[in-house]
Image (cartoon, rainbow, N blue to C red; front, side):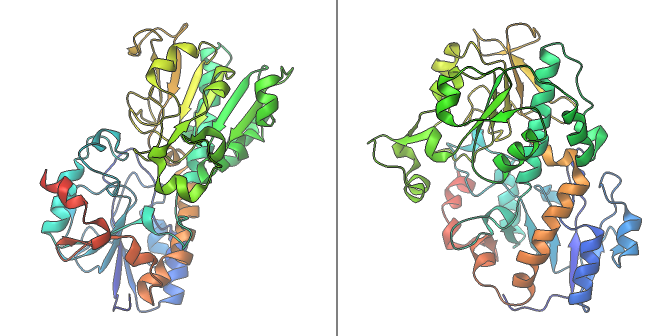
Length: 412
């Protein structure tokens, strides 16, 4: 993608509850050192975890006006009215999986009309690049907030368990706003002998297990988890090959599952039946099987708490009937009606915050920006090896061929 880039911008996030940024002040210094002719403009923000003066001290200009920018970075979806004509935007649009059937399962900012967002992008002839599809040849993402989603999601879920069982709860992650202090707090808690199940084998699950290893939980294998009783709290991690199976009972093949996920069914129920706490930390696509079905819910009498980091409404975890917020992270579900209840006793407690990394915004932004500096910016400014083109959804008022299926969605 060899093209002249003179100015790069960072937009103020539309969501007032999201304090993250795609590039931190130190990243501006690093990029200016390597690309000395590029100007950086940052829109002022009172909510961003890094202050305007920090950016200014690292060489960025603070201005509301981004019209000079060739490329504009954000984190989450941008309100359509703020989009400028004929610019290149890079953010999580949460659009590439959309069609009329999957709209209810869409991730992203609550209340954001994805159809109107895409229509505005097309009308304004914007080049839209989505972080989620900047991937290597094996399909692995270069960028993501997943590790910190896992860390904060695990912390919140454990805190919900403490609160539900009338233990003294920990301080909220967003108020503490320091990963080392979160770990320190957990080291001083002796969890009772419970079983905790984690599904997933990517960045999110890695973050969950990273934090669990700071606690008195012991990791056990899936066989022992099913068959043994323990005198201490334990957790088990099910990878993709452990929680789904081919309906033909053939050996699991990850590439086949990715391409033909509708041919698979969940095999997680035996583990959920033995679990007191479940943390969903796996990637889910609408064509993939749910972890359990609604008609199986009444069997899960031992299960007290679900932390759904995946957070697809009516998606992989059917008890996630809504997403929650940082300020109000939890809700309770009536086991008989599967409707929200104010009654804590005997009901399932659910944590389903959809922007968990924003509870540790400085640290999660720093890690994310490191990825942009190393794995994105050079391929935007110098020569693209295909990763940027692969993630480009729209250009010059049209969908690129790979994403042409979205025309049906925007025209519906």
